[in-house]
Image (tube, rainbow over all chains, first blue to last red; front, side, top):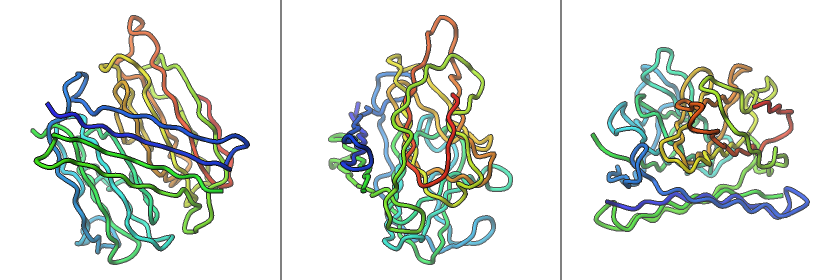
Length: 139
Length: 144
């Protein structure tokens, strides 16, 4: 059984009149158990070359529906450094391809997913580099 | 006025070589390098409803403005989970101890962040959830 830990630290010395220092860690486990997650896609790096969703080509598939048992954890980071060069993550399974998240340059997200939807990404600018990884239990 | 969010993902044994990912984002206004300057602070609610409740209400002015959301399920029972919904789409499920952090896209006023204690019963006890929003200049209402 593997042990995988996700830690977030949010900090600021000047957003508030007192220092902000929030840190929490989660040990990633299989659904509703204390058993650690076992599988990962590994950290991938890709260039998003599509600037639209739907039938256009060049989107990057971040996760394929039901590839992992619930709960798969998605980490994604927009590696672009120019503000406004966004990555758009949409649900390719649901009719209308609804937008789920958008990450501006430098943003990252960590999302424990429901796992039954395919997530793809397109970008404001072609190309935009991203890194992403899914951690969970393959099925 | 910089606020930073750092993620660290570590595992010594999930792959043949150790996994050690650490990345920091400086929380800035949309399409700019100006730092975010407002926050709701860290809120705590105790959920006792299996139906969706609004955790953060979307604002029409918020479309295309930057907002970063942190949510954690503080239940000690790992089987108790909350479902996170935006625009009637399930975007996350947090079991006890799990957290999520994401940029919030308020594409329209229906993009509220809603939360439900999906497997809550009167015998499980309340599910405590903490959340914080870091954002730029628009008003956000919380009524969870």
